[in-house]
Image (tube, rainbow, N blue to C red; front, side, top):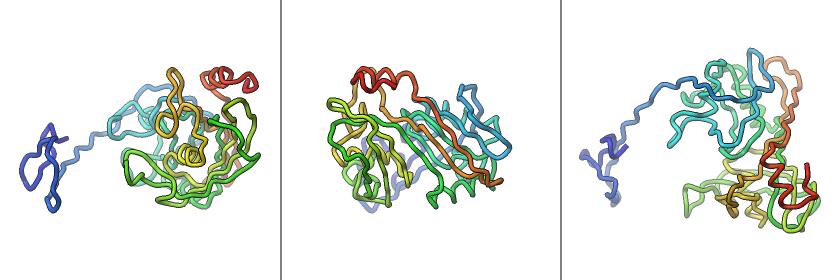
Length: 262
């Protein structure tokens, strides 16, 4: 934005290398481009006139943003009528998954469904369960991490535990192997990077997490949104969905330990 002249400093053009001193006025002109539908294959698990449930592939960003103006889940679903909410680039998006997290998401098709789904999430009536492989052993059979999650005060591109808004993550050990543990994880809140931050905070980062753990060449974050359950926002009917573990995560788990064969 600076390079194309959309940012000014005290009324004059700004240079990218210029450091502000404090007390100066920075103005930016944001140019919003219209969203366009794109032919991006996304498995749809359930659909009616009010909502969609999709099985998001790893590598797909949920909505347009800095560095991702297109090629997102929103672009893939625009021609299916997603709508709701006040953010023009996030129509119908009531919760998100990280780019490299695969699995289930519900997306609204209108304001009534959107508002009710947001209310269900806020009231913790939506059940979201993940499968994860984390580093280390010795975790209790079940456990809870109850710690706020917010922007890292030393690095605002990351999130951190102990600051920000309340966040609760519950986990259950499914299998334990040498140096790694497979968990079922349930979210009670939905903060950005919550599972990744919470597991890292207790010394068990998610396997192959490049931000809060240790990247592994050729492998992605071992985190999958496996189950999703909620009451239909219009009819009240209980809905429950399950997504199989993707093949790349199966291969990675098997490589770690034969007991992780899924």
